[in-house]
Image (tube, rainbow, N blue to C red; front, side):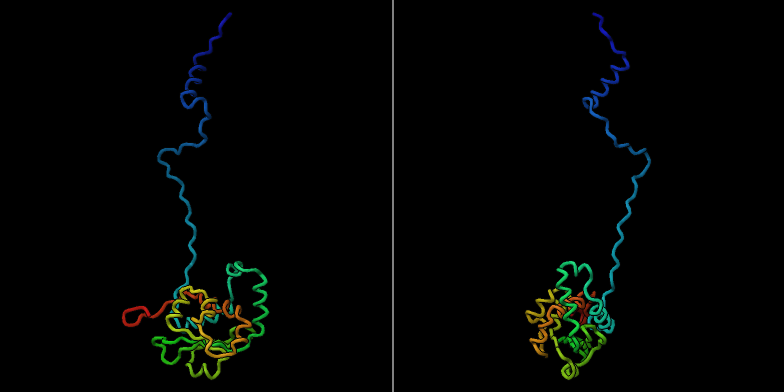
Length: 207
């Protein structure tokens, strides 16, 4: 019997593949040519940050009115079922009153420690700072919290708990009538709560 002898070039190629990994397929990753830098990845654009507004300043009051009227974002709405927001839309049609937000122990504000919001069908048509006497005379409801409580609220304390556990105390107004629309109140106040807020520095410390 005649034995066939493979050409030396074939034997060399097969031996080289075996030595490289037992006949495994070569890698499909291409080596980067020397001296060429890796491609740069574009950084994700950062979200613009809103400037901090000083608590109870004129700009903060305007922002509170705007936030109240703008209502919750789509992201916030997505956390609850649509029927919840439908209920709020119906409830706010009957909210025609004046709400006063009062701060007890507000530093440097003089006598104007109340924010008055004139509401028509749940929408704030006017916002202004006023004295407690003015609020007592004209407001339908007064929600009062201490300065420290307001700091905690603006820092993210749950608004529903703030009202239910009396961090914000309903100091004036018909309790049953107010709580008929409680979810409208808490969600609207939560919009105000999301304003980027700073607190004034008094006597070398943040109050």
